[in-house]
Length: 178
Image (tube, rainbow, N blue to C red):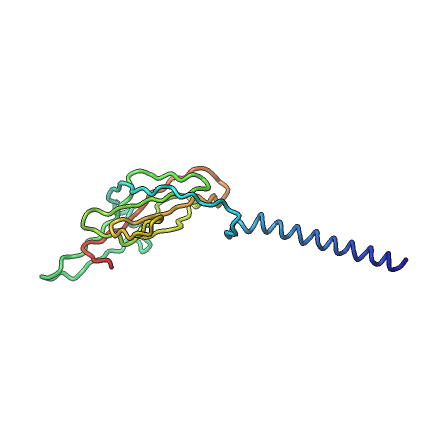
């Protein structure tokens, strides 16, 4: 009789421990794992990349869009070298990214300039810049005059919906990129 009572209590303890463990695993799999990218998220379906039209950024916009607060680049003028010119450009129209989706956009420099950096100008925290490079995000092809931005609307703060942003590209001329 004692073995039966002791075995019954041990079995209940093991079942209780198993139930608690299963609950913790389920909470981690459904609550934390999708945030850190475990494969439970939807498979992305890439959109066709678009090269957006641009306009020259004003001085305050250029300062706001650069990390260094409006750095300038110049070269020592000589008989053999032309001075280096630096310009920032913004997309003409805002780009709208739907909640839970991503957008590829190429921001181009004017003729004779090369794209050296780029980014996103927005007032929302829910937009994640997942790629920023002079390479096409789908083909990987190097495009020296176009800076590609890949932006995802991640809905970080729970304030969902479609969000708009403008692409920024910083251009330098004359420069050789290898």
